[in-house]
Amino acid sequence: MNRRYRKTIIAGNWKMNKTLSETKAFADELKPLIGKPKWCEVVLCVPSVNLQAAVRLFKESRVAIGAETCHYESNGAFTGEVSAEMLKEIGVKYVIIGHSERRQYYNETDFTVNKKVHAALEAGLYPIVCVGESLEQRELGVTMDLISYQVKAALAGVPADKMRHVVIAYEPIWAIGTGKTATAEQANEVCEAIRAVIRKLYGARVARSVTIQYGGSMNAKNAQELLAQPDVDGGLIGGASLKAPDFVQIINAANQE
Image 1 (cartoon, one colour):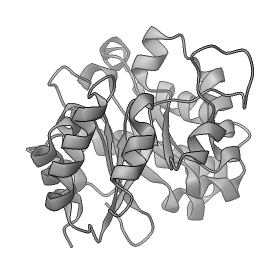
Image 2 (cartoon, helix red, strand yellow):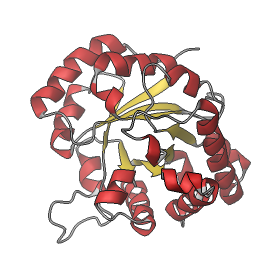
Image 3 (cartoon, one colour):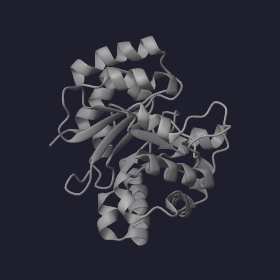
């Protein structure tokens, strides 16, 4: 982490977990534990049916609410989809874009990721843009080339003055839900490479300001080591964000002076 130049963000991604009643119970459990984090921003990205309730439940806390995806159009005949404007109006602040599961199961492409980034920024949301490689791609030695392409594709046409609203999450696909985690050095190496791509696109000042998270099975046990890396500015947390005590431990690791 480097708080001198950029924000540290710990974001939970609940995926398709927790009913409305479970969301309420989680809020009741988390709020007394979390206090008021001084050094990091806390985000919970929850299923769309729970968004309004989550915004209300965490209104008096330091927890911002995020969505898990959005559509790239503002309206239209897109049954089942939710627009960025709809999210903004109910109080959502962040939105995850291009998560590997969206790419794998719902045919999300680099092209649609870019369109969603623009839609989110236009609506005033903060996109958390996910990039990452599979195990086969890592073993082929194309990690850096692939990540560079994904970052460039996602940010195509995004002006420099909008980059302060963009968060990048490096999520090695081989480490999501598998229990495997990149070493702290591996995570930092790719996050550093992502920052180098942004530096080439926008210059050093913008690159220094962009928050880059690690999103591959960060948990209560490894969070401190990962967050100690200079280019890891937080985490996109999956399973560990579903249990309030575990999530708080990660937040505490990011909130140390």
